[in-house]
Amino acid sequence: MSIKPRQITVGGVRVQVLSKDIKNLHLGVYPPNGRVRVAAPLRVSDSAVRLAVIGKLGWIKRQRAKFDAQPRQSRREMVSGESHYFLGRRYRLRVIERAGPPTVAVRSRFIELHVRAGQTKTQRETVLERWYRQQLRQLIAPLVTQWQDTLGVSLTEWGVKKMKTRWGTCNAEARRIWLNLELAKKPLQCLEYIVVHELVHLITRHHDDHFVALMNKHLPQWRTHRAALNAAPLAHSSWSY
Image 1 (cartoon, helix red, strand yellow):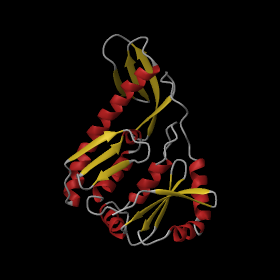
Image 2 (cartoon, helix red, strand yellow; image 1 turned 135 degrees about the horizontal axis):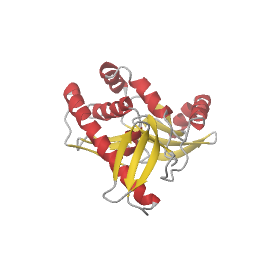
Image 3 (cartoon, one colour; image 1 turned 120 degrees about the vertical axis):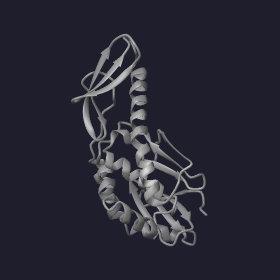
Image 4 (cartoon, rainbow, N blue to C red; image 1 turned 30 degrees about the vertical axis):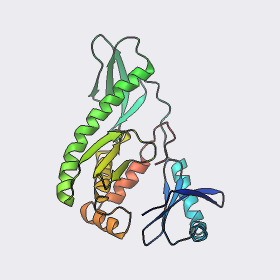
């Protein structure tokens, strides 16, 4: 059981509060913009939440300072020479105009984008995005198979989509997970961490002690992978993960 999220302001900091059927209060600060979120037990009042946040204001500010210092990509113009990322590595884009269907290939330090002459920035972005999606789906499939067996869970469906607020989501009732298209740009171990994270939510819905214990058991380095994911260069868009 949970109640619709609400907003409170504490010391000039806007905080999203979500009341859930959990035992302990959890406070998190999320990149890239330092969004503050509190998951609180149903019995805990907003006054108690405010006190908890006040006690963590110094930590919240330090976390936000880290995110402010995080490298960010400039706006992509889809022209030769600019940087693009794939599996955590930076590549230079090489746009090649030619007849025939559009294709993408990784060659040495370059991502080669083969497009017809005169294609717009948006059309080029669509081609590259389609390629990212194809690559990501190929990487996800064996990870899902492996970790379903390891965790003893089963999905009815998984998919890839663009998301502005999460790296992944899990609908435990439908046994379905979605993974963020941006993960194609991040290191493979970060993708694995998100796959495992969402599959564990089929066992326990909350980030409680049981969740942490399962992550520690099956993916002991998960905190390192999470840190690497949050430290990776951010896309130009101001997403709130």
